[in-house]
Image 1 (cartoon, helix red, strand yellow):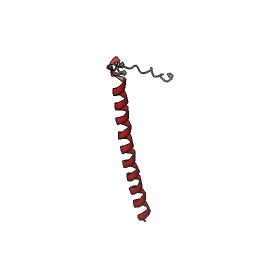
Image 2 (image 1 turned 180 degrees about the horizontal axis):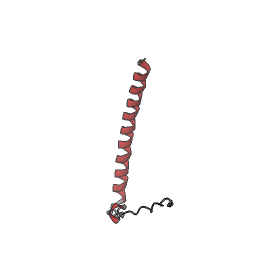
Image 3 (image 1 turned 90 degrees about the vertical axis):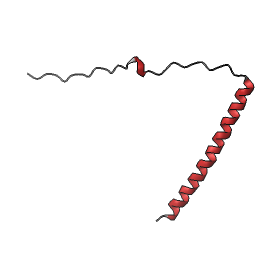
Image 4 (image 1 turned 60 degrees about the vertical axis):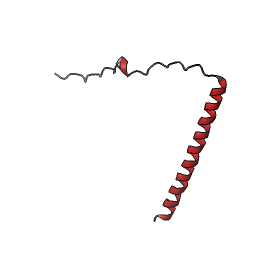
Length: 66
């Protein structure tokens, strides 16, 4: 007798593997939020400049290697 193929059961996630619920942010004055955002943007600009320099160096090394 030939049995039909077994259908796999859907996987169930245990509760521990779910994303944690978001925690509320502490109350921060609007002036501080502005300063923090400015610092973040300055850091991102610095990172972007470094990445541009790395990109240029890589382009030069690829151009010079046969």
